[in-house]
Length: 264
Image 1 (cartoon, rainbow, N blue to C red):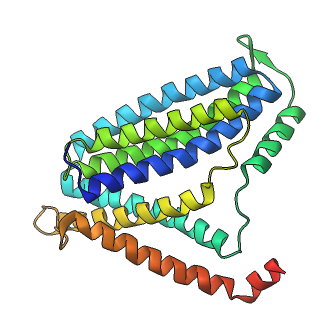
Image 2: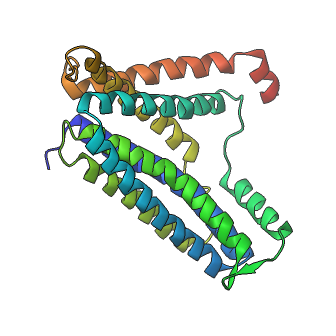
């Protein structure tokens, strides 16, 4: 497989984004398993994974069959840009001191406390609270992974016919790694630099989204995708530019009176 800047960025972005979501999903399942029922928690996890597989397959086929390449890039690029800006905004506010950094141990304790207060209902031989919370947690976090895999993979196929395979493989690798480490540790993965990873992913999503959205603007002209100067190497310039602007924003936030009071 020919490795380009776009392919490497695709693999890195999907791996990091998937790892962040899998860490959060693992915290929920671990809390349900330790507090209530491993059988129900794992059944809910498996059910969510099956549902995600179906959603991903249907959405991927629909996008490939019904939307032209340039329109696909415009739609996907815009969605990725909005999604990435949301992650980047949260990361900037956290780094700037206006939002509290996410703590997996605190999230784990909150999930445990909520599960202890929930009633005990049994359906189909399963602790229904553990099943539903595990299913919901894995499905919602996994839905973001599926979104990233589909959008990144399909958009990257213009430069690499194996783009969807690269994105899927990176997500699967991230999931297996998180599960393996979590099973060995048997505790929330608080040592994972989740906030830093989310910042990096926000930069990558924003850069790729901008890149593909601009290419897709060709739909309104000739109908063919536009081409950036330097082709996919322009992504590197977008990442560097986004990094510089975000660091300036963080530095500015740290000098605001609100941040100074929070630090004090």
